Image (cartoon, rainbow, N blue to C red; front, side, top):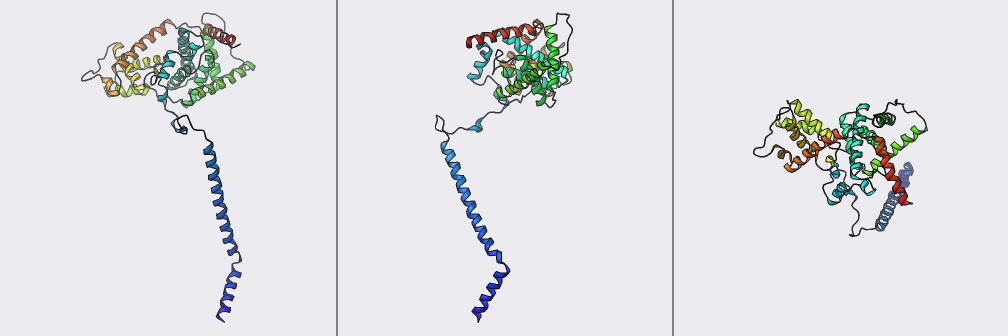
Length: 347
């Protein structure tokens, strides 16, 4: 009797929840299937890992060792980088050192003038000039048209410093500056650029140049500017009230953008050099502390580096006065001649 009642109770419970038993079976099958998929996925991963070729040292490549720091562009940290400072790629393509320096100076001059006409901040102009210097220690002036690179540097720097400008505006400004530099001694009237096929081709070339710029720099386009350090150091020296000193130091800093000192020295050292030089060249020279040690050593700058940068900045000032009449048309013609020589050698 008891046995029959138990059977009846179980049958009633089963009839109340007919899908419960099947659901448990389904969950069990699902769990078994997921476990099988995980095992198959792990086997596939192990199979791919076994096919990865090891380096010559018997270890897998460490991709996390890629350097994305702005300090990677200090070309005085190893022998390979220093070799580029002594022999830039343009010299290997037959360009002489003087023309190479003229192109660096002229490109930075056009970038600075273009930034003023585009009304972008000075920090964007400084970024563009440093990117321009970096690029042509990786690539040759002969193989990469500097006028396209100038426009690409301005375009990219305006985006980096959050003051973006349209490619059309950059092209129009460069066209105007090219006329001023090339037709300085002529009376020919300025003719605005027409929106024709040549304009479309030029715009495409500028966009391509921007991509090449990013590729050559490995997308490491961050720049540590010393400009903000000048005010901080003058504040530490108690000289922020001397506006002539501050303005003079800023002027030396902007002159230094036309050189490659930003690829040779750290921003802290450059800022100290500008203040050191400005304190000696203002109308009333200001003596800075030298006891118990020179003031710039407190900012991790050596006396040798400060003196070297000061000499370079003074030489650059003389160069600006001597070469203010550089003709962009003549320099482009020299580049075209060098490019034709390379093309003949390849043939």
